[in-house]
Amino acid sequence: MAFFHTNPSINFLFLISLILSSHLYNVSADDSEVEDESPFTYLEDTGKGPSKWGTIDPLWKACGNGKLQSPIDLLSRRVQVFPRLGQLKGVYKPAQAVVKNRGHDISIAWKGDAGYININGTDYNLQQCHWHSPSEHTINGSRFDLEIHVVHQNPSTNKTAVVGVLYKYGRPDPLLTNLLHHIKSVGKEEINLGMVNPRAIKFENRDYYRYIGSLTVPPCTEGVIWTIVKKVMTVSREQVAALREAVHDGFESNSRPTQKMGDRDVRFYTRKKNIGSS
Image (cartoon, rainbow, N blue to C red; front, side, top):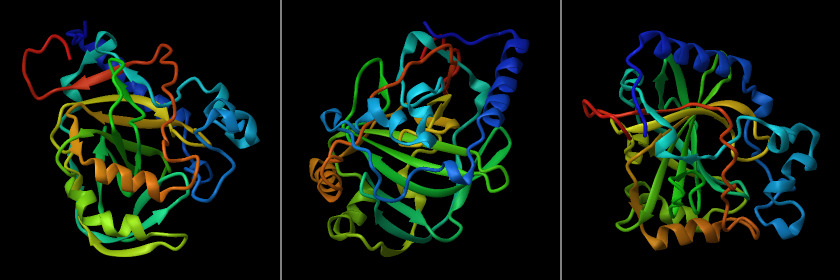
């Protein structure tokens, strides 16, 4: 069962540990997600699958021996309700964006100022979003059909904060509806999308999980602040198929297996009052 600590000293200690963890595992510009065609896949029989990522490049050692790796399974019995985390809200605005085929995924990168999200008093500027299918994070062992990662970075420290939203098959996703033609046609050259409003992702003011983890692709750098929205959204089969067909062979299913939890804390924020479990 999850629980909320009534002892303020315990809550204070968690906030301190969150801040120290993000400083200890500082994500530098050189540690950001790979952007080009890289020698890794998601197929284990290629010898370059997830279990081998840590041996492919010396800079990717964390993929094999890291202690704070992502994604993870969000188990209700290990989650602690923590109302003081505050509502999840981005200060976003439309900005110029492009769609890219990075080989291992499809991403939308904002070229202008698209706004930011504030976590623990620190602003993280919106950089890009990309998709994994099936989902990388799981909830109580259940994997979903799609997951979007909305990536933010603090310009002073280069620390990274990612918001993850899970999807199941159902009604089409509004953002992907507007981008479907571009996703199907994007090649090696990025395509200018014009103004794209990040609010179309619709994750604000939701209940969410939070923990310290890593990038889920090489170099698997640790110290990433993860926020996973609890509400599962919907996406159409056609939209997921388009994302899969656009990437290169070996990346149609581009989800890293869940990693060991270790002794990490997972906090859960809910807008509901008097909740004793997640």
